[in-house]
Image (cartoon, rainbow, N blue to C red; front, side, top):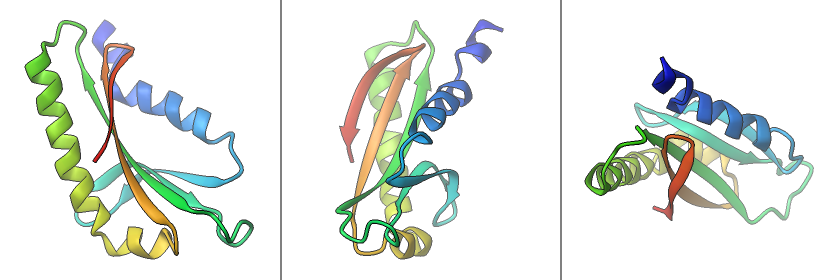
Length: 119
C-alpha cells in the first residue's frame, strides 16, 4: 500500500499541481503523441506571449526506494526513448508552435528525485 501512495501517479499529480500555478504554459497531462502519452507537455501560451522560446515534454519515471542504480539507468533510458518518439509527434510539433522543444527526464526513487536529464 505504501508504494501505491508513493507511486508515479501521485508524484505526477504533485508536479502538475505545481506547474498549473504558472501563467506561461498550459500543463497538459498524458498528452497523446505518436501512439503514446507524454506524462506532461508544457504548451506555451503563444497567443498571450508570442516571444516564448521553449516548450517542454516531461517524462516521469518512478522506482521503489530500494531500487539499484541499474534500475535507475534502465528507467532513464526508457524515458529517453519515449521522449524521442513523442518529440516526433504531429500534435507536439503543431502545439509547440515556434518554440524549441526541450525533452526532460525525471526519475524518482520513492519521493526523492534522483535524476534529471535532458533527452
